[in-house]
Image (cartoon, rainbow, N blue to C red; front, side, top):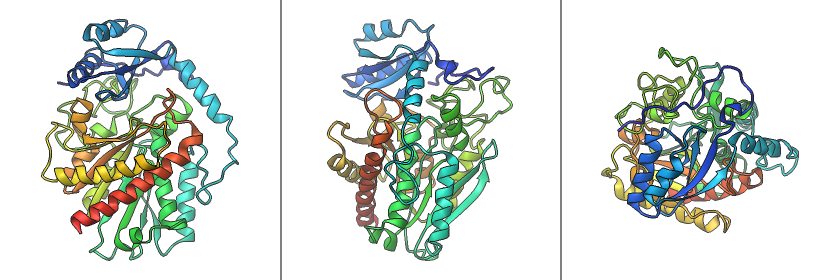
Length: 421
């Protein structure tokens, strides 16, 4: 079943976060798989926005427009517990924005010339990549395959001790920033650059693997979320649909050409899961596609998302396991166990599983399903943690998330090497 209609945004005159003024958000907690399925049905029926997907005995976060007054009644009738997250989302996001702007950007320099005590601009991230490539030309190279819809370059880094010429070395491909509002997904990618080039403590990861690191898949959406409307998720493109000029953008993680637009999507551009007029309609999606198809040595693909402390793998479109199901789960457990050992005690433990089964909902056209379909043995969506009722992780925790996530990746890559070596 598809999600039918949800007016996320009709932008006529921009004022920061004005589009969510008066909206509420709720934490919801299903305690059984039946409740989880019922919750997903309610959210779909009322055309709401999951900011964090729920799991059994794990809270989700749902945005509710002022006119959607039946939401809590539906939850009560289904026996699903809930609590208020924010009475006014505009006030909530405005407060977070003010808090972030007050941070001393010169403090706690970490990771070479890139600070990890704040969320960085696209320009700063790209400057970091270019500086790394200039300083370490023997192992690091910046590639700019295309520009975004709005003309921003989309840059990624290739890291290799053999200039990608040793075809016996598997490739690890990691991306972040597919969704504009998921700011936390970008720092772990640049931190991986730091650990592979500037501060190498695991030499085997360079000796045995090549790396492709794409920090910001969706630079237009990321910039729009930072500057104009914090909850923005999609790209900023306009297509031929009559509503597209007032509801621009496509959900990149529904735009891949694998069982495209069959489940967990909406044909209305105003939906936050609008998959576009056709698969690969978005230039941003084609960048990921081309990396996957042009590099047949990719052993593992990781796409960071937020938030939820989950490690999810295919198949997300129907909840079945692939013929790599054992390896997917085994490597996922290695990643999760290592993160759980290194995380702060008040961060949630990571859970591992099939994307559709953990969420209780199927979704089509996703990057991990597509990557697995074109031959990548190990494909994961890693949902990074959230904390203290905010959507954006407070900047003082960015370093910690980067550290624990990198340690998890190291364990996962080494486990993958054992299984596929």
